[in-house]
Length: 320
Image (cartoon, rainbow, N blue to C red; front, side):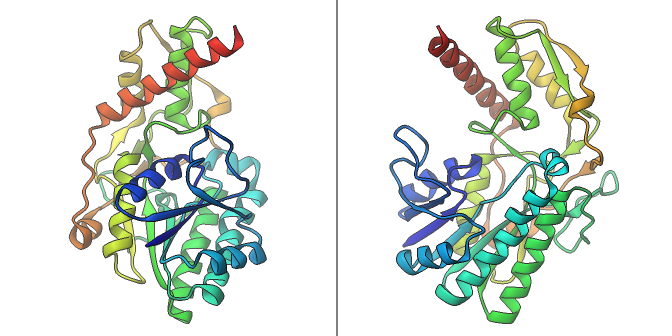
């Protein structure tokens, strides 16, 4: 079975490629450029195309004839989207529309897993869990762009009979995430302080938000199960169903540090608009696929911090 993965070189893609390959899929990565030796995905067949280029996407679909398409490609930072709203919308909303149109014309029998975000739900009442019927209330350009992509996917499924499953994926973490995101950014600061190349200060944004955190390795398992068992035309939350205050996560990371860390608010890390509370209800995905988030947060934090210790040590060797 052939699976085409857009955004394959990103955080989730780096975990999804080996996960799907280990389960017997012939995985083809779609990327803006071919990976160089040593990069994640270098050993996987790669097709080069920009997600905003319809003709390139149509060519790839004609050539690969995938049975499944996992659409991960996108600009995934809400913070960055406030600085680059037009680029975010062009990639996430218009790019998804280009892919859907290419699928309609060239690969109508393929199953498409359209990966979306819980950020589309926006702020929720404290103590509640957002279900798939919760109305969208996006507060960032990123959330708005992914809301449009979600609605476009539903519309294409209804209008053209595409076999399309949507996710509203809540926050996930683990090894391989870029350092400009919150949790890997904290782990990077700790690793640099331990190595003596950074201050023993954790510069943070708003820590009073509550998030539903899932390990990325559980997330890619969810995506496999949704490709296999998800109901066409249906949206699924991918989440643990448990909320954790970001301040507690930062405290847990700082407690793992080998040096004493001081926490300081960095105004540059505060967003113009934020979502104070966002926790999901995973009942639908559990009922339809049997999936559950099983990786403890403690393991995710341990693995994240160890990865950044290795990154910082490797950088020191290269610079010496």
